[in-house]
Image (cartoon, rainbow, N blue to C red; front, side):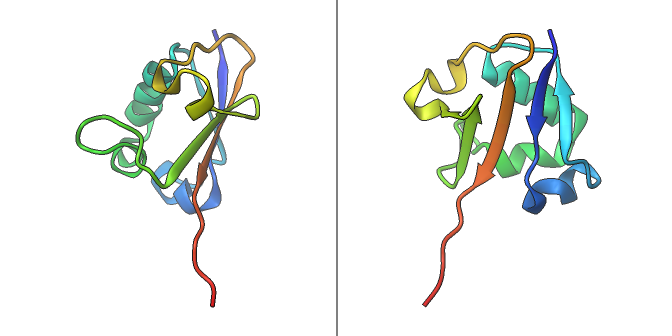
Length: 92
């Protein structure tokens, strides 16, 4: 099963510049685990010490926020697209 993971520019430093990765796992937690194995620097950027998503990281599966699905337990299927979107804040 092939799932495409889109990596945003702020996290590409941890992926040697790769904008996308392919993983072969479901549920989402396993897919992220595989991504973290491919790119070890990703783990600390996506999850906290307890393994939960960091609150400033938003993850979408086929355009739907996983917080409104099953979170890290969201099932993935072949052809799904996972997008990692870091929250942006600031301004004056």
